[in-house]
Length: 127
Image 1 (cartoon, rainbow, N blue to C red):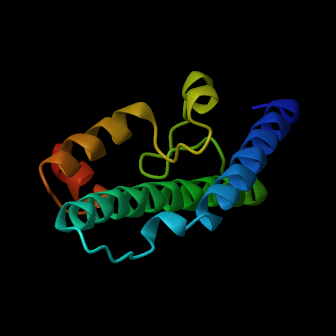
Image 2 (cartoon, helix red, strand yellow):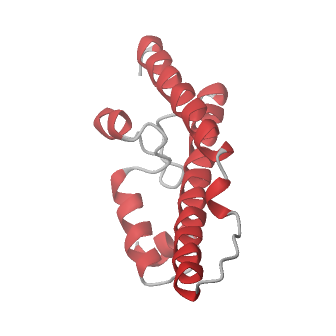
């Protein structure tokens, strides 16, 4: 990967990081509001649960973006964390924070749906 490409990925990741930090500052949706109406209570609880799930998803994404920026700094960006093969440029353009090549990611996703253990355990058993 060229230095120019690496700098473009770094800029994209830094932009995404700034965007996510702004989104995560907005925690108004998880405030607990009391209402005399039971139906409003149920609606508020459902909205609060959705807001919590969104915050959780965004914070996980921010963690992945920061990890990708760290990999750029240490020189390992674009290399699968499991099999150590290069992650395709096409995949990195689509998901610049990708830590795994498409094959390792598919195995991890498939086994996560089944409720299995860590990625390393899954990939060892898959091989």
